[in-house]
Picture (cartoon, rainbow, N blue to C red):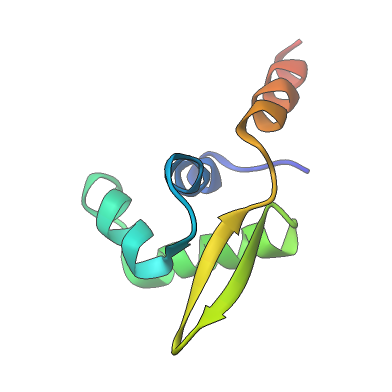
Length: 82
């Protein structure tokens, strides 16, 4: 499962603290990345399809939790560089 650089930014937020809502992720990375809410939600949907994260309904929003560990991602990335 290949994760793009943008998706990795979202994953970093979730690895630091999860579960998080799309709004919480946007608040953390939006200003630095110049992303809007739609961008974060698109990235989360791509990560859901790749089974890198899971979503649980919490009232009117979803909370996202990583399924892919940071260690596994780092080892996949370093194998890709070799």
